[in-house]
Image (cartoon, rainbow, N blue to C red; front, top):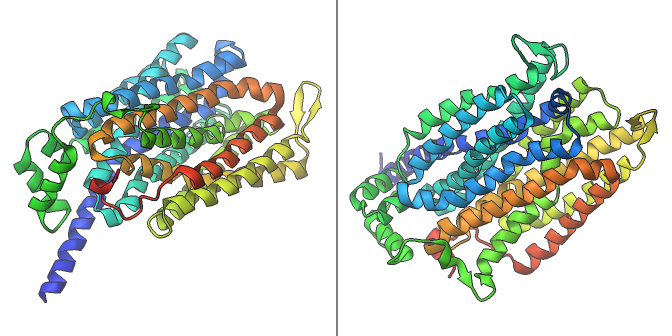
Length: 467
């Protein structure tokens, strides 16, 4: 074998190693997707079981998101103090505790508390996985490897809907049906403990981030990790990391700027908020309830939710294929335009719903239009904003503020998610078509924002960001 072939073979082997450890870190994304969307299948059953109204249901469903904002806010500081791997382990334990508690609540507020605990874990996972992957991935592959986080999220969403459908089917076609000593919706929430245990085991087997090791003064260990994941001038790379990190550890006060925070941080926060204000998680948290509300039976509603999750996976693969080829900015613009049109069409289709007795019924032809346009919305989102927002938050900030800025951006994403999720049940009852037109307006706004304010990050090393 020639020297060139030997180097190529070694590079491939190292890339394979990086893919494996990035995939392991992305398991947190799987739990992120599973835990946030699993409640979708049980919304109506929970409302019936505890005898609460739409507002309280929305608050309970969204309670995990408040915890997520807290988890995202503390994750960066924790990661800089105790390391990326330890933080993953903390998240895994919280996932396990939340799943068990959510399966056996004795009151609606009790369920909400356990959902908050799980939300803290989700928030931590949403920060630590993209940060860790960005720190171990070579620049030329970083977009695709960071996309593993979003792929894991959409797989978690799809698996949760598949599990929901199966459990409801075993319980006689309803999440309210009994399976042994508890109802199907309780099993739906409790099953999340199984992947959480796997995440705890896997997270304990991958190496610490070399950038954290350098910041903690463990240069020899960082050199060992870099030799395994990124061939080339390892000492030069360590020097770059040291220079980029500077003399002090990153903290929230480093984000201060003329207008409250630095301009790059405002951009990251806006991108994070706009990703949620298009209403994507209404589909994943309430789609079963949504389709049920326009006249589709519960079993078919659960099946439609599973179909939507499959569309989400397909779109994510499209994004992974394109994110490093055409760049982050063009992909966001294409996605925003597609979302604007599909959301507007969805709202228009829902305007034809008719009230028959106490139930709403969507005529068959408009039901088909709504399904196609809602699926198109999910496809455009998954192929663009679903992946690219997390890639950008993991790479767009200068090294000295990355952990703190990523935490703030992710917390913003979760707060925006909460605002949309807690408001949807009441907005749906008020005027469902107008609700979707509002989401379409935010999608249109996102086009303008990306064109005007976002800088391309494709192909630049993390040490170059901010320059």
